Image (cartoon, rainbow, N blue to C red; front, top):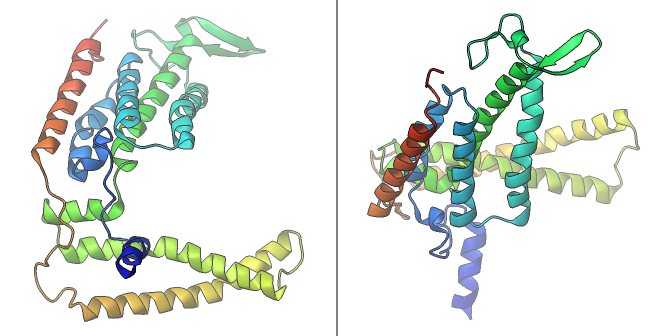
Length: 287
């Protein structure tokens, strides 16, 4: 019974434990974090320079396929992915179009924006189709870059990313694990804030209602939150000193993150798919 209870306790309190095994269909979790970064990076860089509409749409669809097939997403994440990105593209596209000067900006065909078709006119202000095309193309590029970044962002944990940088890229562990310990302060602050707010509510020191009372309440959280942060920092520093952190050039890794043949295959296939999209769309052609 003790062995049965030990496993969930370690999983709950060890933030650096490896992710639990997943189905073979969700292949993105089985890849090295560096592979999921190296695959989309060339496409992300090239998307900065494209100006058409088809190329970013193709990369958004590619990212959607990878995430829907290779990742285990919750319904809310799927809704944000499939509905939130198009909604953001529509809003950003119109917003970017409003910033365009139609008398100086050139469209993709080389003509001035004010020489394109009129989309709508409100009084003396005119929205041209060329401005909408430029704004939509800019928004789609941003959406494609975001979607490609989510391939690694939604399927990689922070500890595994740091481990891969330390093990494969030879990042000094003093930098990597110190940064990981610093990132762990963020959820710790959230937990401390919840405890402090609960204690204030139990004692009835809510301070009333209104904006001034809210400012007074949040001001009262600062001192205990700072004290808790200092205590936590001292405990982390003592724990790192007790483990001789920084005493040696290298350390033994408890959880290796290997770079396997599947990672090379994923990078090669992603690069091939990116090259095929760019070759078929060829966004730099001169019309």
